[in-house]
Length: 453
Image (cartoon, rainbow, N blue to C red; front, side):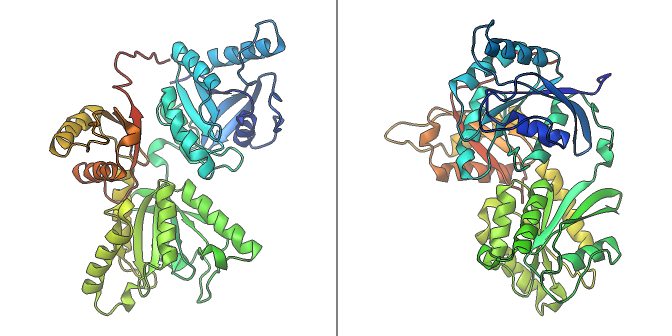
């Protein structure tokens, strides 16, 4: 346990977005930000707050190789001094530029210090940053956090990573871990009955409802306790197809709903049971999966269904076909108007949340991998067999795995899907997104001793 507020330093080469993240964490524009590299020269400190976590954040000059007596060299010395006195280092790279030789050089220096490091791949919004974020894994700090400091994306994941890296309880003044509410977003098309369902869940007419579509505009947060479990429930605006969203206010409301998905831990997708699995429903489910959130599907207005058992059986087959990337997602019939099915829905929400947080030991994974490869080995590509050497879980929330093999670029997508489906079935991981990253080489942790402060 630290006897002071945690000190967290942001480092990285020039112009990767350190000051932008600093400003976001302190909640105001203390540091100058510009497209021109090298704007920050001195260390700058501020009091940061991130979802109840309080700490001192330190912005630094961009790391550059330079003569110790030059201005750039003195700036680098200031940065190194900040790292030496910090409890945690946030090492930032530019996801759009990928890993540069300078990034790799400073990663080696950080490994030598043996202090806790969280790797951040900034500017990861959109497709342009996806490849660079994955490439950052080779720096050896585990799963890179894909964030956008400018747009505030990935802040919930950053919060969890900082908590995991600091000593237990450090900086947490707002809420005890056991009392932290599970963040639950309720989403869906307009008029699916989201607000009515939430009102029935919490037992009061907290949210405005009516027959008109689109009443909810802001993402409204409601604190609620169900069977000793604490939740923060977010009602969101109905999401129509992008082509139909023309008004500026509606665009802002939909954007607010997307932020609620990114911030949530469990997402309840509310479908109108009388006309389920519209193309937009599938699009929303895919958004939840791509954001890596736990998902359950609530079939609302179930009291209007005439043959419930037959319809439910048919819908379960349909959801497995339409959403193979989140196989096993819970499908729960509910009635927001009558209150039926809510307890079962919440039981599934808690079960799915626990799966989303699940960790599997490396020893178990590699014993399992040996059996899988023996039973169904990867195919030979261009006459050469691909060898899978090692499997580890990089992180939870959602469960993310890294496989090290001889030729990652040649491993067929179909075999990767087979591996993920086998992981899902054998380790009981239904209804949550799974991530698999491939890297070349042997066990990367063999022989490496890392000191922890």
